[in-house]
Image (tube, rainbow, N blue to C red; front, side, top):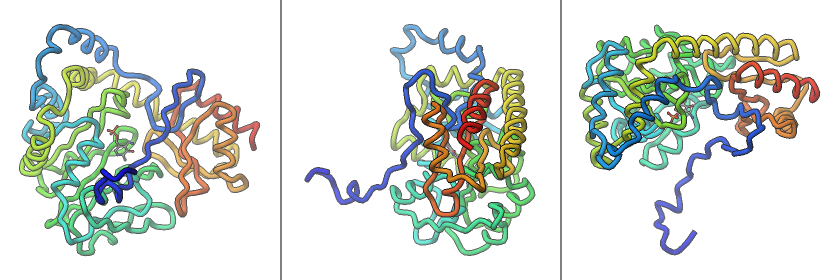
Length: 351
Ligand code: PMP
């Protein structure tokens, strides 16, 4: 801290991301990256863009990417917003789409960036307890609010809310923006984008970091009513006119064009999750039903923090949260076969 810090900066509590160690031989299962890598067509497209065009600014509207996304989801480009990762998209959402003076509802176990954005933008967050089995109860989202946000599937639990229940929350809150953060939806859920034509208060966010294996490229998106998208554009254009660089735009377009790669790799993650879930259950773990590319598991006889530390000593990194109700869980990213094998071998030594 220095005397130059404003009281605002002094009070900021920033988000702490999972660690990104640079050690080569680690089995990295801590930040839900995709082990199968991006489509080769993405790499080709980025290589082709590595030329003199980099001296030119990118398209301020990322219009080729918006067109590709609109085409993929059967919406209009005016219903699509893009940003530097869905974290940035969410920052703009918190900045401009939730009401002040009324609570923003989100689950009490959820993506820990939401309370951070509440602090940044002066929004009063109101955590809503999940049920005993970690499911979200629709009836709890009928209380007065200035907005609602939840991940679907939820993070870090992986538990999915069915599309009908998502719709029930949206329909019950016509005067609030309801944001469904679908960072992990492609691994087992049904997207709520199919509902945006019917509800002007619904905004769905997604990312290319997970199912398209492009966490390093930083591309996220939102789909909703054109008026909500226009609000996000206004905020973005008051912040940075160029949301995505040229490499990110061409790479992301190629990712949406290679449907086969997307389909094969997401199916591989789902199959790997099913195998890993069964193997962990055999080792005595309770595993929450997951529709994401990670699982949330606890062992009735072993302390989670001790297990996480033991795994680290075996060069396997998983995520452990020191938060009420979940401190006995480990969040484990679904790896490829070799990574899962290394995880299981380490656990067999530790249990
Ligand atoms: N939402 C949720 C629920 C997440 O877990 C993540 C990943 N940490 C994000 C959004 C942000 O992902 P990105 O910024 O890489 O798009």
